[in-house]
Image (spheres, rainbow, N blue to C red):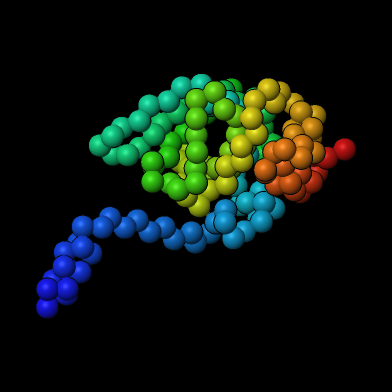
Length: 151
């Protein structure tokens, strides 16, 4: 009985977060599927951000350096919950962002690809896709190939 009571209180004290990735899921779908589902795909550098500890919402501004699909823009105001596991957004870093259904929100199901910095053109992205030391280089190559951007 003591064990059952202890187990009950232990379960009550554990926070559980669950995500259901219905339409898009970065862990189980290929880059080409995300490229088709995304309304906007662009790359850029995170230039500012703020985090609300109460809501867990992080809002950040991206200086857009290039657009692969969708609406061309100079900056993007994005947001993500701190519990969006695997989404790592850091000040000064550059990523390729996939936005779905015209939203500016990035969640645990969304595709975000780290690309480092100094990427100013498609030619620079092509060079990044060939790097052996960049873990996601093959995904960049798949994306560029799917979008017809490889020479």
